[in-house]
Image 1 (cartoon, protein in one colour):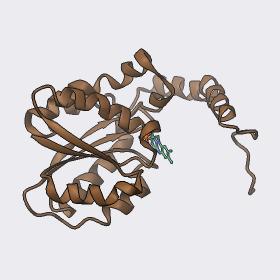
Image 2 (cartoon, helix red, strand yellow):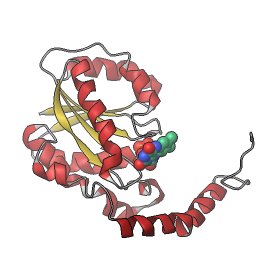
Image 3 (cartoon, protein in one colour):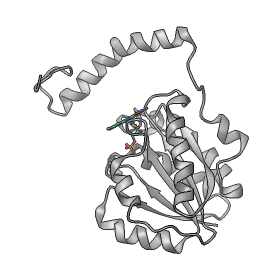
Image 4 (cartoon, rainbow, N blue to C red):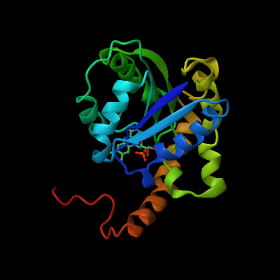
Length: 216
Ligand SMILES: Cc1cc2nc3c(=O)[nH]c(=O)nc-3n(C[C@H](O)[C@H](O)[C@H](O)COP(=O)(O)O)c2cc1C
């Protein structure tokens, strides 16, 4: 099987969490001879090549981050340039996000199922998982701890070219945290995480408080 992979993140490859996830997913996917070609929607110079690859390939995997509960606008803009295929092509998705609870990705997942049909492709499932905020801030073993899990999902995908197995469904993790955990997460966000966000903003040259309202 040969797979066309489209990274739908608007972030450039170097900084894209989706790209780091795909690195591990494709490692597992290719163990038994599956091959792939990968393109980045963030690079507009690639759009003509992605379009040509979309027309040529029959196994298509679109990997994307959740942006404001749904798909990034840049990916939407690219998708609007595509014509429906209706040639027996198969389309699967990898949907990943920052926050961890599976429930907040379900609306996006439902949208992607409709999208595959609109593009004239057979829907082959969506691998849904959050808790990926920190990938690009980590290196080496710390990063591998988060992204390494996707290697097994690559193996799953290689079996039948889909993300419909029980293992893929379970990969999402908890749909919603229990109440005590939600309380704890709230506290962490108000304290430790807030400090972390402030530090990150400062390293990016931000001199104003994070809750600054310049237009208020
Ligand atoms: C503009 C924007 C909107 C986002 N919206 C959500 C969201 O609604 N839910 C969520 O869990 N994460 C959200 N995130 C976090 C990203 O989904 C997450 O960091 C992802 O791993 C980024 O992948 P990328 O680096 O490949 O773009 C958002 C990030 C940005 C920049």
